[in-house]
Length: 188
Image (cartoon, rainbow, N blue to C red; front, side):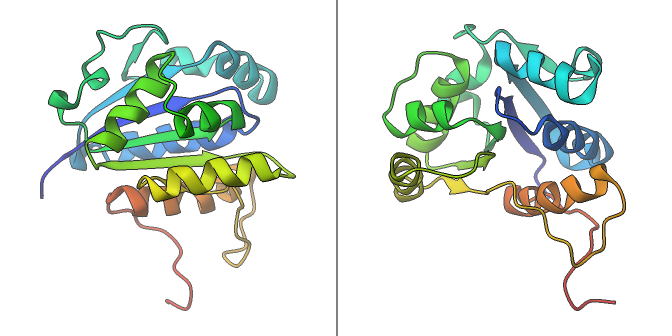
């Protein structure tokens, strides 16, 4: 199996736990992954610290690129990253991607992924959503992106916040084409 080259962007939307669980799972699945390139918005770090009460994003074992570093490998399609996951994805980031505004590394990388017809997964975390949000989601979906609302499932009876967040993250990993052992509906 070909190993994955994955971009993970973390924006300032509420839901840092989803990013934390995603990064922990990617580390456990390292045998399937060639590389993970990361980018954080300024707000992502502040929200992480507020919601999770720590700065563990500083301990991530992946290369973290500055949000304005357009020399990062995944700022170009020639680097052949196959998947980008924005988790959580703010509505502002979603809007800029939908309108083709590449004003930072996250939006440039998303633009590259879409133009190269590769996999863009946006884990949106906002409620309620407005017609503007819906139209932007429609635009991204029509361009080939996948919108994954951070709506956890409960049928696996998660007993911790991390397990609850994993019900979303496991779906994201499935969509990214990474083999992951997880609860499956109606399976023993």
